[in-house]
Amino acid sequence: MNPVPTSLDQRFRDTAAAAGLLDVAFDVLEETPVGPLLVGVTDRGVCRISFDADPDHQLEQLARQYGPRVLRSPRPVDRLRRELDEYFDGRRHAFDLELDLRGAPDYHRRVLAELARVEYGHTTTYGALAALTGNARAARAVGTVMNRNPIPIVLPCHRVVGANGSLTGYGGGLDRKEWLLRLEGAIL
Image 1: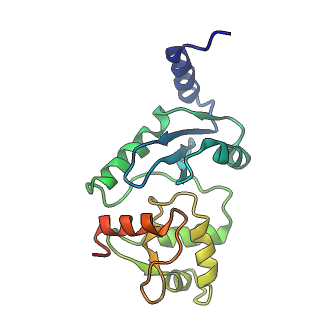
Image 2: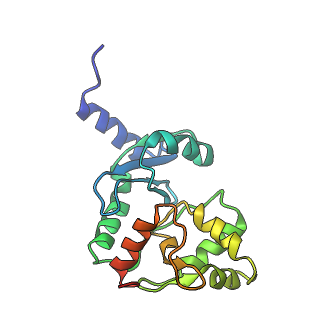
């Protein structure tokens, strides 16, 4: 059995993406300061950034949420890759990307919208985010949303700390959370 030549495979992926035949285009950014990241985009915007860069764990979920045509295709994620590189280099303090949060419950979208307003170099608390969504007593619900954030870093859940300012849970691990906050100058 002859494998498909790399150039032909890449042409197929590029053509499928250019023709709008993909529900999700994804790639794995192997070398970032926080380790490998699986990133995904739809025609509406960024839909996934995952610290679990093993596609086998992510593709089924992406297919269930966005449609079955999920393909590794690097070109559609170029803009996201460039903005993440600029962020990690300290040259970008705000992302200029469309986001695709379809399928997320309304409350999650409200919390994530408030989260997106937390500026580079600043932190907030779960309780403060809960209050901004109209329910000051929903800090645990906000924690659940942060834990399920499909687009960390761009939607900066690393900027959410405990009520006493302590670093608390982070889907990417506390070491990554601390690194991101140090990058932004939010902690010394």
